[in-house]
Structures are given as structure tokens and as C-alpha cells.
Image 1: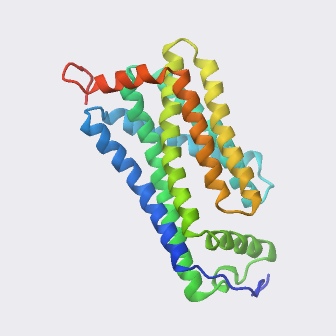
Image 2 (image 1 turned 90 degrees about the horizontal axis):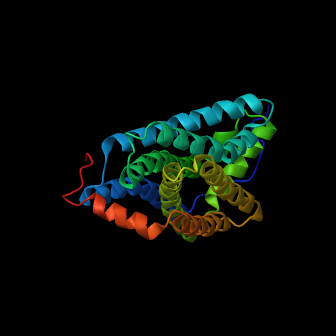
Length: 276
């Protein structure tokens, strides 16, 4: 044990704290805005929305259990990375199994959008809590100093915490703005992957589509993780934005996006018989 493993101090600037707070607000507002838009066009379906959130929660928990079992001897930081990299497998498999087994609950593209909104919405809420937690941590670090986080810890653990706090404190307001754009892109990717899986099931190519969805999701996570080694905080959200844009273009071509958008627009017309 050691009382003060590091002598450096870390300060969070006002713009950095503002940026993290803005990011949390964006994460908080995204599912609200999405639900309001769907409700405006009479396309919001409550049960798919709830099941989307529930399956996401179960997928994340299974991902965590798997990582803690398989990577039992690894440091906590390594487990966090592994959980992120395996998330694509568990989330897309869970999403696929739900869409395939509950065709009566999600019978249309409009239902699939509500389902994807539930999945992405819960993830956004979790990330909003995390972002607001960073603001609280930054305020504490400024008021009490780095030693309030590292006192009494082993040198290895204290160094890991110091590195994490340094990363949070180094994010400029511009970097946070890119993170907010990335949050919107990630939300849209979840909707796109839900539509992709629904389309694959409807067209009779479920397993091939599942493999593609896993590949796209894992590729996005792995490229974003790899970009974090650059030492440039802004590169990670920028990588996420570019990869998300590529996924959206690919999925829209794969599912014939124009016809899907037409079906979504018609879903809210008075002739639509779906339950709202």
C-alpha cells in the first residue's frame, strides 16, 4: 500500500466539465426526442420499446458475466475493454433472437424502429449517468485533489485511476462536441442494425444477416478502441462517426432503404392497423 503514489495534480477546466455535462444531456435527450418523433408520426409502439430496452439490459449482463468468467485473472481495465469488444456479439445475438422468436411483437419495420429505440435508448441513459458522473468526479478532483482518489491504493491501481482521470480531464470542449455527434451516430446505428436483422429475417437470410450485424458492431467497437491509443482524445469520437456513417450507408443499401422509409411513413397513416 501507499498513501500518495503520485505527486502530480489533475485539474478539470470549466470547458471540460461543461463538455462532459453537455454530452450527458445529449445522451439523456436522444431517446426522448426519438420517442417524440415516433409518437408524432404515430409509429411509437410501447411493447417493442420496452422489450428492446429489456433485451439490451440482459445482453449487457451476460456480456459482463462472460468476461468476468473468461478473463478472471486479468486487470479490471482489461476486462472493461474485453466487455466492449464482446458487446457486439451479445447485443446483436440478443436482438436477433428476440426479433426472430417474437415476430408477433415486432411484425413491421415500424415496430423494429420502436424496438431499436428501446435498445439504443437504455444505452443512452446509462451513458448519460456515466457522463454526469465524470462531471461529479471532476468537481471532486478539483476540490479535494488527486489524493482523494488514490490514497491507500496499490501503486498499480492508483496509476490506473490517475490515467483515467487524466484522460477525462484532457478532453476539450471541441472533443466533447464530437462525442455528442458520435452519440447521435451510435443511436442511428442501433436503429439501422435492428432494421438490418429484421430485414434478414423477413427475407429468409437470418444467420447470414446476424453474422453481418455482429461483424459491423464489433468492427465499430474495435476500431474506436484502437483509435484510443493515438493519444488524441478527439480521434476516438471521430473514428466512431466515420465508422457509423459507413455502417448506415451499407445497411441502407442492403435493406433497400428507400422502400423501408416509405413503409415507415405509411405506418403512421390512418389506414395502418398496427397497435400504437
